[in-house]
Length: 365
Image (tube, rainbow, N blue to C red; front, side, top):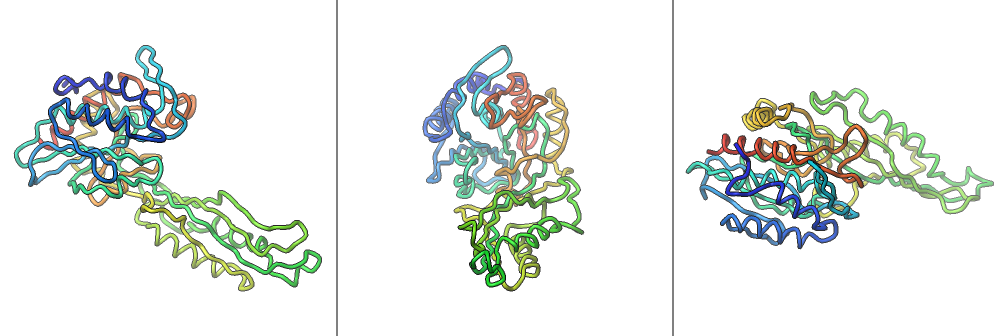
């Protein structure tokens, strides 16, 4: 299978897409995407949240497969460069390479009379997931494009962030007993963080959750007992933990550990959209086996594993969801995605396009 449905060439698209800066404003990249879809004779629309949507097949399907990835990139923009077999530049692997492969599969497929395929491309994955949160598409299965090295990723840890606030009583440092030292209260707090996951079972695919102190701020004067101290923590969760469940559990343990002289609170960082929570799809599901077989047939390993980064796939985990695409987050030399040396090979993009075309056709044709 060529993976170049209706004359679409994923490499040609990628060569046009990577030079388009989409780190601060996705408008130009979205225009390119819409014109590419419409050039195939398919209607495309942009919803109020900036999602680009296109569909093929039944309006009342028994099977609805959704193909998703994002068009935004992190800053700064890295210029496009091309060498033999390699495309360099911001977004080449995260995630315009996966987008090119998904487009190839979407254009190639002809869904059965009782099936539907929807392309749903979001604009804000690298920041707050405003597009994914507002996406009004209910699928039975989801394939999310990210750089996985053509492995099929069925699970990912979630990421939560919050601040532990300690409030004591200020006093002269010469009479420390007359106050309540908020910084001193960090000792039991750090102990709680260190022991938070003791006795918890590891997830069979994702391993252990983690809780890490990342930033601290406290005190106003060098000769004063500090009245306040704030500690930011990073949580990498595994199923079935939710953001609210984590917050309640941590705050309860902190209140038990910290002296009554110091008030302790824990609040998740405010954001307008839900945190990216952990998810896990049954590795025996048809979606997983079909894409794994197709990846192997296209030249990939067909490996099934967890994804190592948080992803918008968590927004779609009410249904079976996998993460798949060309390129790698990192290689033997170091970081690739989000790095100055970001790149993807044209061979990987073509293999991903072929694998996705084969898998999508098997799932809905």
